[in-house]
Length: 106
Image 1 (cartoon, one colour):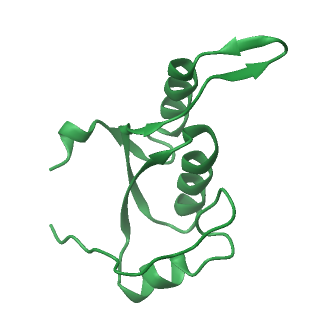
Image 2 (cartoon, rainbow, N blue to C red; image 1 turned 135 degrees about the horizontal axis):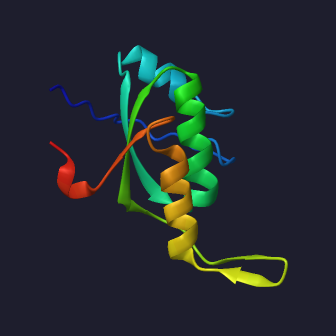
């Protein structure tokens, strides 16, 4: 397995890491087709970026315990972060990404 490390800082201003950035161009330039994703705010940034990456044709591995979210409120009900996290991981798994634990990375 080849592992590439981008040495470029890509500044973003929107939830989708590809939107109005040169991320896709840099990945193509480096011949990268497989992404490993983790980060903050699963319900916004991770979800949006993973779905966009899938639209671009990338193979995505999503590290579930490398992502985090927060409690959300809807109709006066607080939905706990663990519920939000599990719903998003279940929604993205298999259709958009291969969702795994960090201990499963080869």
